[in-house]
Image (cartoon, rainbow, N blue to C red; front, top):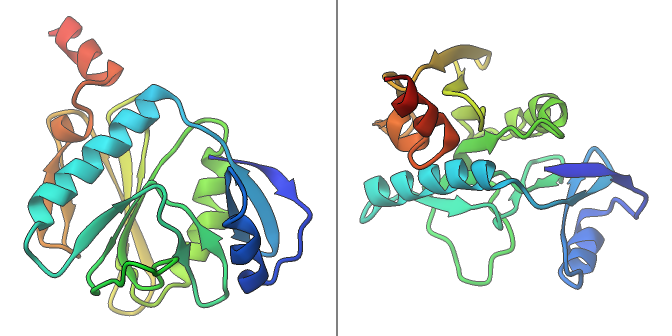
Length: 194
């Protein structure tokens, strides 16, 4: 999640140099610099569940899932930190960002939901390699799957309920919603209602 913009020089190389000397993480979006603040435990549990699910399914293949400390850079030099990003290109240990993701996951906290679903969506959709975006509600079994169509347009499908599955054609895998929401208040509420 991100706080309101700081006024710093928006040059991406100078920004990267500056950010690497900071104790906190920052995003550079449309020339504005935003500090990344800590997330709630429910948010982190959902993001961790998704990362672990990808790591287990992708192990040994060409693609790899990266967690929230991994920067993504788009062709316009915007730099962001999605909750989970998947790239299918071998990476060097000294790389500072991924510029060719195939899938990005954002878990939506109430404080930055609008920013994540507008400005950051535009940043992500400018990446030519990106095939799918997933926006995940941390407090209910609901997500939005956004897929790039063959003509370059984007199509949204909503997936709801713990009995549903998230189909990810970009990676040829499916994630059960029960796995995404394991060990969360969402799962506990479902147990209590059952």
